[in-house]
Image (cartoon, rainbow, N blue to C red; front, side, top):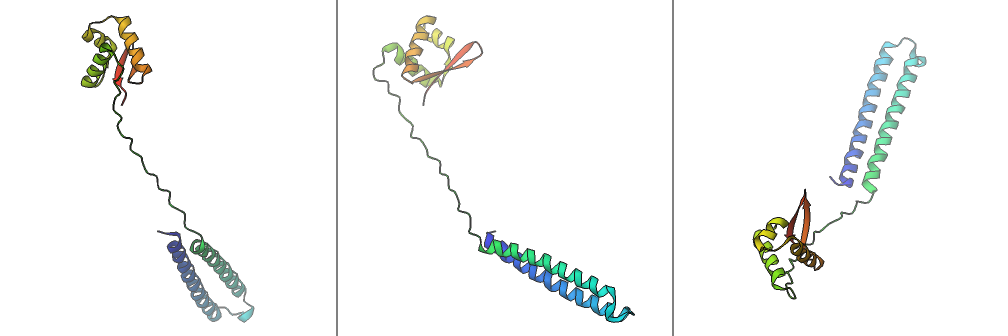
Length: 156
């Protein structure tokens, strides 16, 4: 619900509460008039009067709260849009044959462990590390540590 609608609802409720209190207190006064033998000097009349003003004061506070909601400005909605990034194409220009083989293999397999990459390409551990260092420097691949091994994936 909007603040204004809630405010009108609260104002209406406070008016209904005030009417109920006044009707109830008029009924109490008539009951006291019939049952009290002291007449207008009966202490029950002052008690009813205090209860009436206390109840009307509470209804008045509720009315003020309702009016506050009616006249307060609505909060502005904040809209957040997600921006989709365009997939960038891998720039394989300037790569030598061994670097191209690594990129093609990773593209085909969607990533693999560095040891498996070394076995598939049939090159040594040091050469594999150096090639991956070069590709990482060009931001084409990323190595993720998995225990004692590295998992190599293409950067998208």
